Image (cartoon, rainbow, N blue to C red; front, side, top):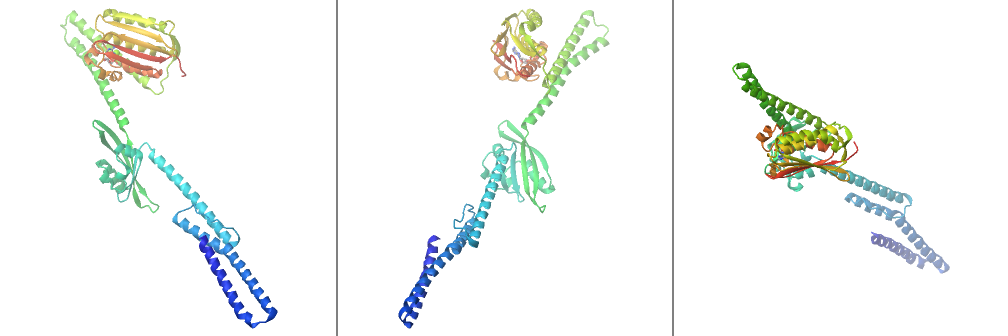
Length: 461
Ligand SMILES: Nc1ncnc2c1ncn2[C@@H]1O[C@H](COP(=O)(O)OP(=O)(O)O)[C@@H](O)[C@H]1O
Ligand SMILES: [Mg+2]
């Protein structure tokens, strides 16, 4: 641009010079003497003035206008960084100034737009739900990261394709069709098997998109992963079924024996006592079950409050050990304790007792006659470890995690015979977690089991 400018300037300069020379050539032969010198000098002076004028016009008008035109051209192409760098005088200067301001505003606007775009993209990509945007003809325009994590493949495998070609689930097709047909939000759910045996449940919400003129422009599909919800729902259903089942057995038995006693006058004393004992045992089982259920529901409440107090473990154990030792004696089990002196802890007294009772009762119940059970309480700097070990039947590796579930028993019949409700360990686990502690189990089938509970000595409520 600079070189074409100076070329133009030289061209005009040469034209002026040629015109002056021509005037000189025509006029000078017509005049005489000193007039020749005056006219010659005037022509020379005139040429200089013209040249300076042309230069000025170039510098102040043509150059800024050309530069502004060039920048405007760059702006049209989308290069908002372009600026004019010429002197800012007069109207042409104002023009180039205005062009610079325009360019700066455009640049700021695009930066802002880019920022907003990337913010929106970040939000969309970091959403907890999958998202897909399709146009009114059913072509996919956008999918987010969560969507790709769920359905696999890459964005390029979806974008630009018809939604029903890239997604096979009938329920998704239905949701889209209904969103388009009824022009309102629709909900649907479907399952996908990502891996064998690993089903995931999704809820899909399809919402139509309208433009300002209220024309349907497409639909946005949101995929919520509701697998966890479904699992909780299933757990709740299982729990209700389990409770009903657990209640049914003792109730049927109590009713049966009571009816027999009432109907048959001939039952002798011995059988009568036998029946009444069964009724008593079964009602005790019912009572234990109801007690454990209530305890569990209290522990599972969100607003569970523990009554913290400073507890000396030795003191707490006095009451417990007498009961436990009796149980052990009945089964001729050698029950020993190794308790460190002055073990103190801040905890809920009744609940802490429950931990000891449940774990030791289990150890005794699941250890055959003549076995050994040991209770250890060890102190570390900021925690207390309760270790209950036995030489009992043990727990097969595959059930070790499940025994903490409500009503989960390795051997249902054996547990029932010991009067177990199947809730003992679930309660222990809840209590331990409420005290922000941990529970672990080590076990070998037919060798024995060790339960280790770790409780922090004190913590802020
Ligand atoms: N010390 C142990 N040795 C072997 N198995 C155990 C032991 N403690 C618990 N279990 C297993 O864990 C299951 C769940 O225990 P728990 O919740 O106390 O219920 P329950 O004792 O009423 O059956 C028991 O049925 C038993 O199979
Ligand atoms: Mg138990």
